[in-house]
Length: 112
Image (cartoon, rainbow, N blue to C red; front, top):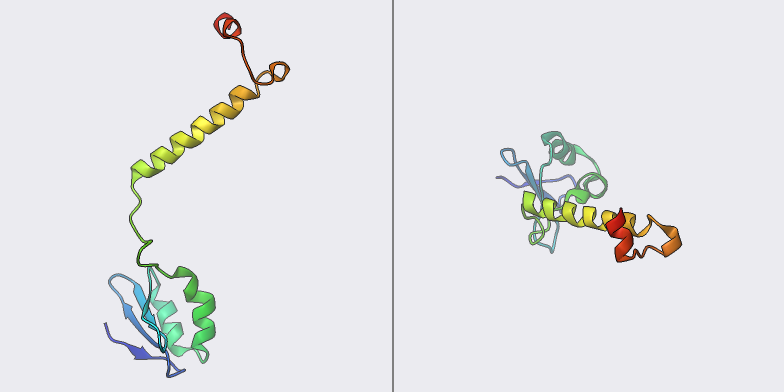
């Protein structure tokens, strides 16, 4: 991965075509990684007359935080779905009978 100087001469960028990771280095700060960037976005960054503007509006929103980018498992989605369904069921159960304020007597539950 080779670093290229942008037209501002103070900003450098490197692109990994295999992983589509873009690394941008500003003066006085460590390189910033951006994941899943199309090649044409990198090429536009190299060619633009105002790389700071282009970076801010087209690339910066895709920044990858080193500690936060972790694969999400199917199990975590399943747990969230179960919690959501339980919350919906609770809301529906408490709003079935407005006369009782959502509270049912034991005998009413058995008779239904």
